[in-house]
Image (cartoon, rainbow over all chains, first blue to last red; front, top):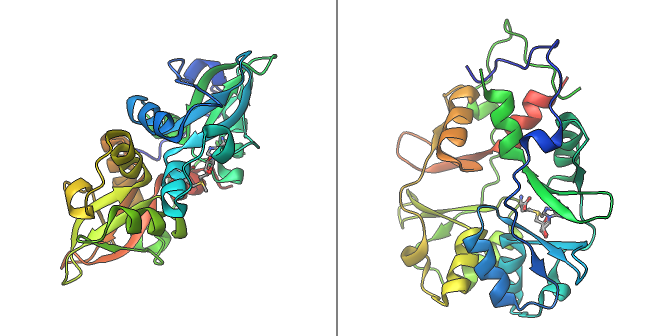
Amino acid sequence: GVFKPMKQTMKKPLVREIMARNVVTIQQDSSFHEAAKKIMESTFDHLPVVSEDSKLVGIVTAWDISKAVAQEKYHIVKDFMTRDVVTATTEETIDIAAHHIDQKEVSALPVVDNERRVVGIITSNDISKLLASE
Amino acid sequence: GVFKPMKQTMKKPLVREIMARNVVTIQQDSSFHEAAKKIMESTFDHLPVVSEDSKLVGIVTAWDISKAVAQEKYHIVKDFMTRDVVTATTEETIDIAAHHIDQKEVSALPVVDNERRVVGIITSNDISKLLASE
Ligand SMILES: C[S@@+](CC[C@H](N)C(=O)[O-])C[C@H]1O[C@@H](n2cnc3c(N)ncnc32)[C@H](O)[C@@H]1O
């Protein structure tokens, strides 16, 4: 049943063990329309935004696209992305990531390496699936 | 800690006990632009679509808005909503709802009464918060 918890004795999994690696990113000077297309093509709703040297500088979701539509402001990604990104790191345990997801009320965290390059993504769905599994 | 489970002896909560009741809905003949505005104003990413007699006929999310942008198809809600809505009912236990959320890979379920009127919404975040609480 879904309420069967991870055994207390079980070692907590690390972010890198359950993160998805096939994360699609976008450059910050891309258009509003390109961002919408990438979100649609991606498995994830969250599109990490990267600088020219591949470092994380923001995040864009379908919600941001919808907001831009609502406000009729169709700028480049840099102008409507969220800059203050909540991230996870590969060596964190997933309860830390779960805690950040809860606290910040987001549904996914880009996973970054020491140099702030995006190496994966972890979603609240991945985490609840793990908690729900028997 | 987030891995403290619900006690096995604890009575499973019902959907109506944890659902949000302040759900914003939209009529099926509303414009693409109105839908984007309502999503932005709503606390939830999910906008249940209702018929004139207030019955659930579909659902629209920011993702659908983003998809419409990507495809440059700006129709009325009826033409881009998802018709096959996964729902929850007030008297279900939340593990049933959690199971549907997992299985169908959605992040929220509109909660309907016997006459298919929308009375609330339950999100995967609500459920993981409950699982995560001490
Ligand atoms: C208000 S939330 C609500 C929508 C949805 N529940 C979600 O989590 O994306 C949407 C905003 O959160 C931002 N966001 C999503 N993931 C984020 C993250 N990991 N760090 C910071 N902001 C994030 C998006 O850019 C968007 O502006």
